[in-house]
Amino acid sequence: MRFRHRAAAGFATLLLPLSGLVALATPAQAATSATATYAKTQDWGSGFEGKWTVKNTGTTTINSWTVEWDFPSGTKVTSAWDATVTNSGDHWTAKNLGWNGTLAPGASVSFGFNGSGSGSPSGCKLNGGSCDGGSVPGDEAPSAPGTPTASNVTDTSVKLSWSAATDDKGIKNYDVLRDGAKVATVTGTSYTDSGLTKGTDYSYTVQARDTADQTGPVSGAVKVRTTGQTEEPPPGDKVKLGYFTEWGVYGRNYHVKNLVTSGSAAKITHINYAFGNVVNGQCKLDDSYAATDKAYTADQSVSGQADTWDQPLRGNFNQLRQLKAKYPHIKVLYSFGGWTYSGGFGQAAQNPAAFAKSCKAVVEDPRWADVFDGIDIDWEYPNACGLTCDTSGPAAFKNLSQALRAEFGNDYLVTAAITADGSNGGKIDAADYGGAAQYLDWYNVMTYDYFGAWDKAGPTNPHSPLTSFPGIPKEGFNSAAAIAKLKAKGVPASKLLLGIGFYGRGWTGVTQSAPGGTATGPATGTYEAGIEDYKVLKNSCPATGTFAGTAYAHCGNNWWSYDTPSTIGGKMSWAKSQGLGGAFFWEFSGDTTNGELVSAIDSGLR
Figure 1 (cartoon, rainbow, N blue to C red):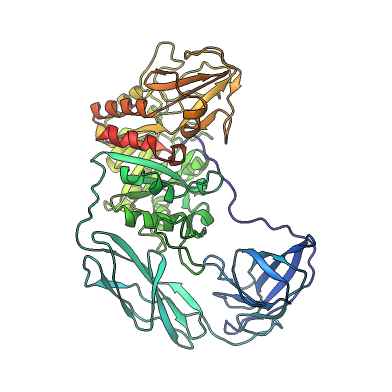
Figure 2: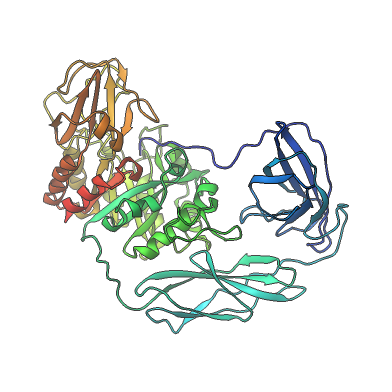
């Protein structure tokens, strides 16, 4: 993909000189000690900002923490971050979130809150212990139970059994988690879950709780599919794939549930989750807050259930898990790389087997292994230049693809997003895409971003032309040329997906309505100059014509090119005539709230 927009995850806290420090200690770990310090980091008269810092000063790991304190009457917490804060009258309790409860020796973690009133905390406790920061013997967190096994699976129920966890003071009970959300608490080592939907995939894990109410790590996951058939038919036999961006949950405010409310989920077959990073030749989770920890309220979530503070998986991954339960035909692939994160592929190509192993470890992480059905590699570009220039050689991409297939096997999808440069001696010619195709399920051919306002003076031409046209600035820069070249290199047509951009590219300073005009620079865009979502352009600058299979629009002194439902219909007809495997698009949030463009792809490929 050519572009990405990100916002930093988490919360910002203004750090001012510390005051009102209170030290605490914990008995919750055997032969360890800990402190907690409080600081009023900001005061604006009617309210203030406070921060607690918990530090493990002992020699053994702390697995969870709870800070308690009392405020005088009239002082209270109004909002909090990086901890779950509750109260009973003037007594306040803060518990760790799923991602920040474990503290190795010497490690620390902070959480903050906004408050009203002017009081300071007193009566401090950390994990129920005294506040002197000393070494106190106490409980260790329980171990993980055994991975559950499933039996007696019916249309609407399943019996789960697991081996017991261990704890120095004894196990109190077990939380049973379905798709990351707690559905029951039981004292034994088995549970029958009922009220399920027939023909639906579920994932179950178990978490032990000891007599001190400490929770241990989550067990491995077991996947269960209830018997019976779903009533929802899959949307045709062609691949209809959309990219969901990890960072879209910030400024764009686009979430997995939007796929449901727009009607798009019922009309697609696959989702590429973008992007995992490639660092030092290894696959890596990028934004863990957005992916695994962002909490959703009931009205924001796909399932209609609110996330809980102690839930082992939240964020986009849990929402995708819920989406797959609701729409069992959808497959999700984890996409690594992209325009920004392709710099690590060169090092990965030096040891393809190690790279593939690292990728599988991320995709199959037991916390979310049931979410992903495959991996997508978005290397921009092998043995060619993108954001940086790669010199891995023409065989590198094939070798990487072969290693991924060997590591993932045939039960996973393995795909790649690739260049659509059909020029002679261009990017398609720089790598062995024909040889690599045998190891991949399909290619997402990025047939867009051919022309744009990086050429500030123009000429104004469609960024996603289906065919060549008179005066084209560079031969081979069109979809038909790219598809033809890939076929000539031995890639089966059924392994080629045509790319659609859910956005336009535009110039300003343009007086000519027809394509081919001059310009003075990029037109203004919401997130980046020269680019804008379809959902905005369809109203702000409606299409005035069609050229080379793509719409264009001239409004004021701006000129834009973008695909509409009509031009997408034409491109889908062409894709079918070429025997292509389907189409993909970048990316969901550019579409309208009722999914106009996804609907056009769906109907055009039927």
